[in-house]
Length: 325
Image (cartoon, rainbow, N blue to C red; front, side, top):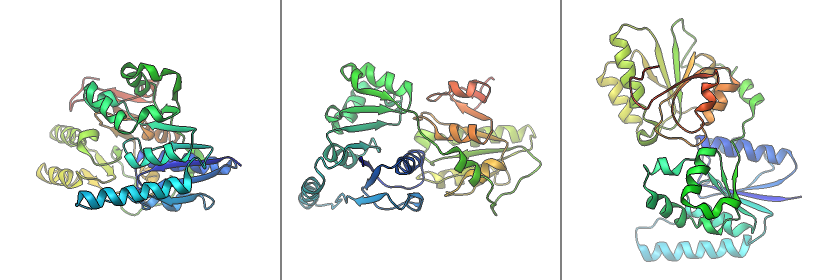
């Protein structure tokens, strides 16, 4: 039986975590011996892992004393090397940004892969030097494979690192369509189907990437024109309080409803008419696939793979509050 290891930060709610859990559960069903290595053994998705999947916790010390921190982290690395050096047939660093995830994957197998979830050139606002530093810090050159979830992400990466062309692979995110449909039929108590258009945003509350203020501003404009509708926000994050404050300041509390994070967001697709993505940048948006499965149209900004939405699945707009359709 082939032994596989996937490393990540944690298994909390998020598109990357959703894709990882779906992938490892599928591989476990196919007979692979799967291990998840986490910096923090936490997150609501832990309960979704198949019982056969093993979990390793690799603690990164964050002590403010630099000497203590470095010594503790050195000891943790030594212990991991002794126990897991080349013990797996394949390993992957699924949390691209994580130095610890990179270390675990590179150590666990000679057949290691780095998973890229974004267009990093856009993420770093076209700063090539910052992109180079990002990948050099996680030691991209030591991976046997580099896997991107989008063609655009791979293309911009190869413009900066052309020498890695032979080991760069495209692998779109994997979802369990049958399970999504099944979960979409569950009942929820904090929102119901209504006879007004309902728009849905699902994702992390991080303004730098998700730009949810665009949705708030657009809602304000449309309310002034007397349109009747509502917007549901599913998710939370570092900027949740910012969004709550802006909704309150603009007197939109009867139109925009921040419902928090949901382990099962799919019933909210069912009671909504359209999904909104206002992001400045994305990897491959898992919400695209979820919307396709649940037959919901999408309004999206021009992020990675937006072309799939243009194929009769919704509307693509520019990255501003008011776009000409």
